Image (tube, rainbow, N blue to C red; front, top):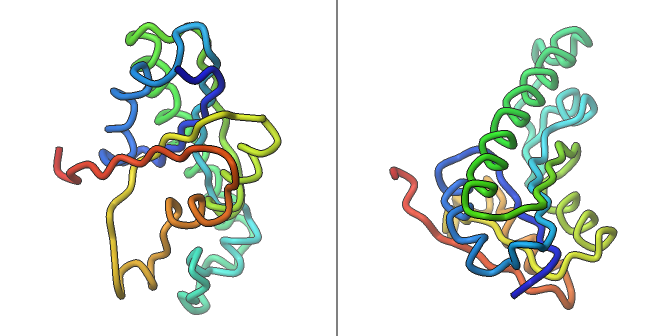
Length: 161
């Protein structure tokens, strides 16, 4: 059993499906940190995907609109994290923490794992490949390729659960 886990979510059904497996791999007295990564204002201004493709110019260059977008993402993330905490505590995990992080998801997850000395990462994957993966990027792939010495447990769940 692991003692210090990071669980990454984005609130989707795919990401949430991982929650039912956390108690099978993390000691009930262990620490579980559930994170969701949102855009920061600079990402909204840049209007790019994590893979670097530009959406083009538009209303997001207005600082008030950019702040509103980030605020909406933060509120949604906090709701997702509250639900994740409820599910994990109901499964018997005693020490669940949550955090909303900003930046590029793969980079932030890797940095948070390294800084927190986590001994396992759990996350869902959409299982994209080919062109869709190139255009949309893959957070799970980034974490696997950039995180050394820490097991990454991926669950490829059905999207329409």
